[in-house]
Every structure is written in structure tokens, then in C-alpha cells.
Image (tube, rainbow, N blue to C red; front, side, top):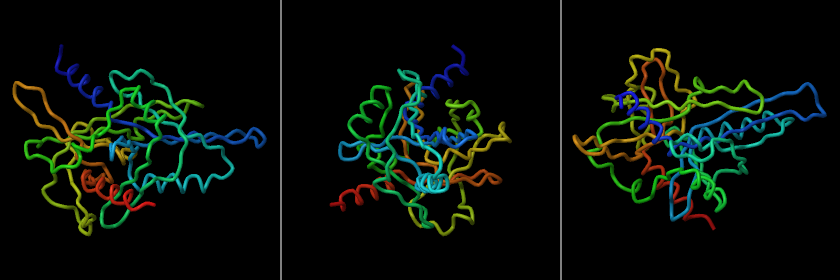
Length: 266
């Protein structure tokens, strides 16, 4: 097997972590002409207190709220796509009953994170489709120093086909990144625990990763002669396209904020 095929198999397997929350909006048949709008996001699933949460950026959930408010005449159908992993059983869109996140923050200090607690039936659907949640025992620890290689996997708008009515096409992108040596001035005021990276894709000068907000950032422990180990250590928040710097929220910090918020609810 070629190295290229090995790399593809690896990326396809990592797709078991990736989940997309989307919305297909159509006009009523009583109000022609017909209108259809669609959007899809990047996200993943984490485990907290034995529950599963669908997580993405806080600004993504803000965008959804604003989108619904700006399109009151359309009928919105929310869906989840979880069929991007090698062993996924279903590749189709599955209806999702959208509701306000249990926790959602997008603040200048850096934290950009939101979560929706999944019902038993929603969890069963994702589990049956081989989605891998980020378990609490893995996110609730400092990242071991051996995990020194990084990449992110998400769904950029650049790689989405949303032109066919009632359908959507996706092509996840796996991007190698490396810790940034300095913090960009735009991020200087961020005091929450963040991780900053440079995009290592010199062969893709056209790369536009808008749409990947909320995607998982992986840390790898590359062990010669042994299987590679991987952890999800962060979530992409934003990126500076010209300088190709990515700002990500440290996952342990974000999930700790979620845990505190859930514990404080009646």
C-alpha cells in the first residue's frame, strides 16, 4: 500500500470524530417563488458526566440564532451529518431537533465554545454510526509533552457542494499545523487558555478554511515503529488568512467552563 493511500486511510478514520450540524431552509409552497438556503458547520462530540454533548464554537451558535431571526419566512429543518468516518454505516443526513445550547460563550478573552446536550436517542444514532466522542478522561488532563505534532480536521465552505436542491456534498480537510512562535496582535487581548498555530500547507495557497470553526484539533505522539497516539486538544475558533495563523480554544479549559455551567443549573 502506498504512503498516499495510508495517509488517506488515516484521515478517513479520523472522520469518526467529526460531526456537522446543518440546516436546510425552504420557503412555503404558498409563497412562490421557491427558495432554498443551506449551511453546515464543523463540530464534534465530547463526554461530560457520562452524557454526550455536540460542541462547536460559540460564534457558530450565535450565527445560527441570527440566521433564524433573519429568515422568519423560511421553514428550517436541522440535520446532523456523521457519516465521514471509515466505518460509518449511514452517510445520509439525519434530522435533528435544534434547541438553544446548554452553554455558549463567545467573548473577547478568547473562549469561543458552545454545547448542546444530546438526548438518549440522538446519542444512539451517532454511536451506531461509529462516532467517537472525546471522553472526559482524555480531555480533562494537561496535554502530555510527548504529543508534539498537530493537525485539524473540518469542513471548509470551500469544499462543500450546496447547489443541488435537498442535498449537500462534503469533503473534509485535514490540515497539518504547528505551534505559533508568537501571538498575532489581533489575539493579544485573549487571556483565556488558547492555543495558536501556523498552517503548514504551502502547497495550498488557495486554502480558505472558513467553515472549519468548531472542528477538532488533534495532538499526536509519533512513536517510531509503533502506532501513533492521538488526542483532541483544542477547537478551532478563528484564523487569520493572510498570515495563516489559527486561534484555537484549549479543550480542557472550554470543557471545564461547560462543567461549571452545567453544575450551576437548577
